[in-house]
Amino acid sequence: MFTLAFFALSWGVFAQGPAVYNRNTPSHSTSDFWDNVRFGGGIGLSFGSGYFNGFISPAAIYDLNEYVSLGTGLNLGYSDFNRQTAWIYGGSLLSYFNPVEFLQASVEFEQLWVNRELERFNLPDISDNYDTQALFLGLGFRTRNVTVGVKYDLLHDSDSIYYDAWLPFVRVYF
Image 1 (tube, rainbow, N blue to C red):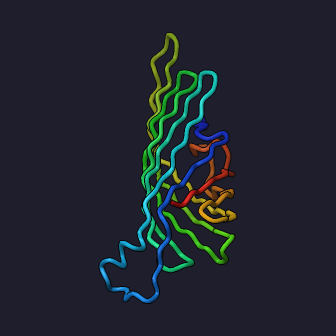
Image 2 (tube, one colour; image 1 turned 90 degrees about the vertical axis):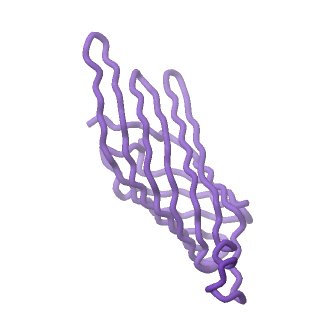
Image 3 (tube, rainbow, N blue to C red; image 1 turned 180 degrees about the horizontal axis):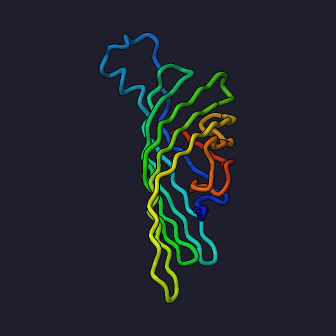
């Protein structure tokens, strides 16, 4: 099956609010829950001769404590190259672990659906609809509000929307 080259080399920016974890506040407090929620997401664009790719991925993260954060996100992407277009949509489960101040490990699961159209000259167009998953293990270096690193897709195969199993990332915290 034709591999959809969604990312040849792309950088995702994950914008999040400040991490707030207050050990002195009882965990049953309503305000404590929202104090530990961070909103953000990613935006990406890539284009070239006859090629365009764009995506948006809003997300919400909850800080369980100063070391662990869990969350969920939505994914929406569009790709157009060589008379082929694709809409990609789905969701993500996110987890981040900060063992020390300068290091962040991550595990991310994505469930994506792909709706692809291929235009052919003098032949009927081809439509292909399928689902695909990605399971990323990532490692990044943190400095202040920025995390830069790389993640690897353990489930990468011919149906993957990603060109390569290795993807760089940049996360920015607000």
